[in-house]
Length: 304
Image: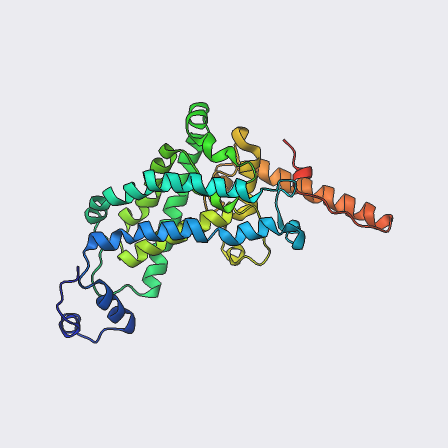
């Protein structure tokens, strides 16, 4: 709750007029508790889990309309009931684990001093905070993910997430309840190290989940804006990890590729990409010699 009774008092405290964004924030948040504002994350996550994957559902159902060429594992086709079952499982965990976790974790937010006050952060400040959050989460998630691929961690916890060897958008948050709790730690570390404004925290939670849905989409769209992000892994990168499954010792990173490169856990993926390229070039030249062309499904060329 803001400690100002009016816009004039807020402006006097800041020593300047409020910006348009700050005026909106004051009008919305002035009489709302910090706890209430924090709990907005529950609504945001529900909407993201429910709405953001929907275009991918339509794409999966309309693959004959030209989308099949972007499917990373084209032999795998999920029906609407199968995708809806995944969504129902995600919602079950949302209401049993994610939502309650948000409700009871507010003291930790107060402890690290996520603020709701004025002034609002600048766009540059928000960008720098988000960059730190993504890098910190990516690094810590990498090591936790590797640990979850040990025999005990995989069999008892992580195998649930790998039930989708060809991932779909709804499967991004699909996981064992223990994994949901464990992977909450990397998401919290960045804001704990560099606390910012509640709006920045909202953006962080939202963008991280949207990114996870994109990397679990099962489609490698050439027009994706994420392809312009340096060191970004993307759907093709993470799809390989799901395809290999339990035996995977490659592509553990959640967002970027630098950890896998530094620690040598991208060698299988790089070898596979080189092999695919050679096979495609060979088949293409052979097709041209015969006056035809070949469509080579990615899954058909994967090697164990």
